[in-house]
Image 1 (cartoon, rainbow, N blue to C red):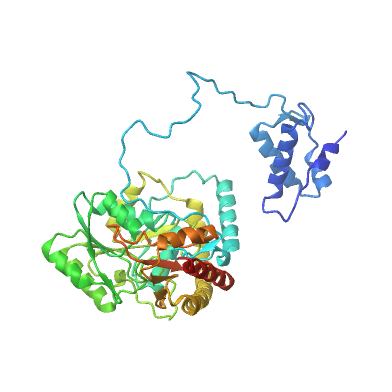
Image 2: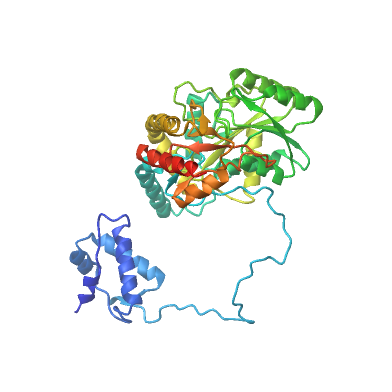
Amino acid sequence: MNYSYLSYIKLENTAEQPVYLQLRDAFRELIANGILQSDVKVPSSRVLSEYFGVHRQTVVSAMQELLSEGWLLSKDRKGLFVNNNLPEIKPRSYGKKIKVYPDTAAFSFHKTIHPTIGRKSFLFGFDDGYPDIRIAPCLAFSKAYSQILAENARRNTLAKVASGAGNLLLRDELAKMMRTYRGLSITSENLLLTHGSQMSIFLVASKLLKYGDNVVVTKPSYLTANNCFTSLGANLLTVGVDNSGMIIDEVETICRKKKVKCIYVTSHHHHPTTVTLSVERRMKLLQLAEQYSFAIIEDDYDYDYHYENKPLLPIASNDKHGNVVYVGSFSKILSHAFRLGYVIAPKNFIEEIATYRRLIDRQGDQILEEAVGILFRNNVVKNHVRKAVNIYRERRNAAYQLLNDELSDYLQCDLPEGGLAFWTHFDPAISLQRLSERCALKGLFFPDGRTYTYDKSKMNACRMGFASMNTKELTKAVEILKTEIGRN
């Protein structure tokens, strides 16, 4: 029998795709292109395994895939044959076919207030403070993800509905980490997993706020969180920030005059200025929360990155009365692309937001959550953070030196104790928007300073993330920035 068509098939043991899927795809292409025609008998699994030098079960798995997809037919005692009746979908049309899909909806809807300005794709740049995916434990994550996917497929558990609070393994591991390193005396019942800190903030705010409620934020502040609060009908009341963080005396002044529903605070590295909320102010904020019965949403988005090895424990670690809701994410540890965050709060509040969350997202990403749980259990995350802190400390120092050596006439920034970005003030004569546009033409992302104040008041300052660039890239970035500033 002529099997010459098999010469078209090339299998690679070193490829990322499993060999049986390579074999399936190759046969699928041969059939689709008419090289392997209808009613032709396919070689036996023994013949194929000998021809390609692979395990017989590999061939069987590939053929089972082709059978289930309808490319092959099994004939009793005769073997496998190419299906002569391959399914072809021909949808029926009705009405007059439209040539252009409409751009404008014919119904009314609520528009987002102050939409967040997104970042376009650049090879490198001074981002908001992202980690470097190149040093992330991607291989360990890939192995864990593949292992879980295969195991769940074998057990037929992929379709099972998980808890609304998220994967138990990851919640257990995260609770253990919080008890050990952040002083939070919690269990998995105090934890809910989400698709990132922004989803966490939205879920929490949705259950806390009613239309007209007052929320205290800083100025400048994290605009995306502000958008979340205002989209729910809340009023924003602003307080100042200095070198000791949010000015709590101003919070107290507001509380004496108005009913405050919640305070949003980035305690460890204030966004955007990177300053840390002092111990005295943390304790006073807790005292005010108890006195005036408001909630504290503590967003601890990059707690792990502290270069002097003296991080302050979260406000939540001293919460005796249940006023604090603690949120965070894994995006600063793994990558901004991994949408995985968490909420820590009293058990009854976690149960409520878990129920609410199921209205829009029934169970989260089971496989992703369990894979990250395995990374925690195997100490991959802990070891990665230790390595990353050393790398990012070196990049912080290198970036600070470059900025001061090359651009001290145009900008001023302090050396942050932690975090992944500088808060940088520029000469008022420099237009950050024009500078951003010109840097973009050179392939460098540079923030234009428009995303830090909700009331659109101007400040000639921006966050300059350094962690996602190595020393060579930082040098190039500063070189481009210096050239474009000189053209201002």
